[in-house]
Image (cartoon, rainbow, N blue to C red; front, side):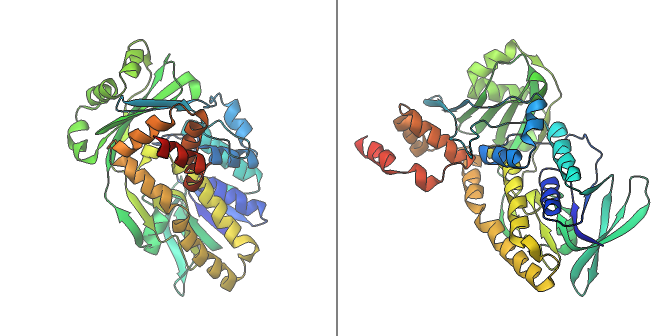
Length: 397
């Protein structure tokens, strides 16, 4: 009998398992893949996520992997305005990081194992075990095809946007919006870069240095163009860079295209009910949003922390656990819905005139520019950004 079974050992599951183990619980972590294994990702970890990695004792491993610190950000809107700066620090951490997932995920799983978690790779959940409408365990197959069952006070689904756990508990959608973009990306060598964002109506381009001295170049298109773009990916990708970030396109001519094209048109936007009797969802299982704002990893870390802190020492007390899970279901929406809505605004792939105007007005004020980047990272609340100094600046303009 385990205290917690976590299904999925990537960026939400491994931290959840680790934190429960550090709280003194017996934890089983199940992962369908065998690490190291890559997955679609924008890789970017915002400053609050970096601060958590440091708190968990894992940031040193990310740095040691050769993943460069990202302490210079640029944002250009339709060629009309460009700002350069960096987010304000979060708990002393000003640099972001964007590790490859075949680097990051094993680091997180290793942290969980060192905390005392039992990790089983190659384990596929087939069914949940119910008693009186309460989830009390899982039935799985191992990588050799052999079946096994395990029981726990709590089963956590950390198994992604298409979560098996969410499907088996029939977790309803509480917020749902249509798909808005499709994305294609690849990796380049010998590409001088920092963290760069470019947009024009209908297009978005992100440049993100990562491991192995490679740079991720991502392009975004409206969802309605997916049927066309998917049949001519590389040409559409390069044309998007050329028309949205011509300076980057010129740099690509001298760089080396190092990997194949990756991408998806299935960027769902939703919140599911995040908990019920004997179960909870974290990460993309609980809520998923367009990757254009690169919030997935950071939010997964924050959700793992939220769930474990709300449950605290109550896990073996059924009534107290149920009360904590109800609170988690509320907070899992309340604490993340603002970033969800702001992400969908960006995913509209418009360039609102008021955003361009704001950037033009703050472009000569480095503190304001850095505070603007901090609202994107989560290191600064939007209400703190619109302080008296900014309001005075806007009024004077």
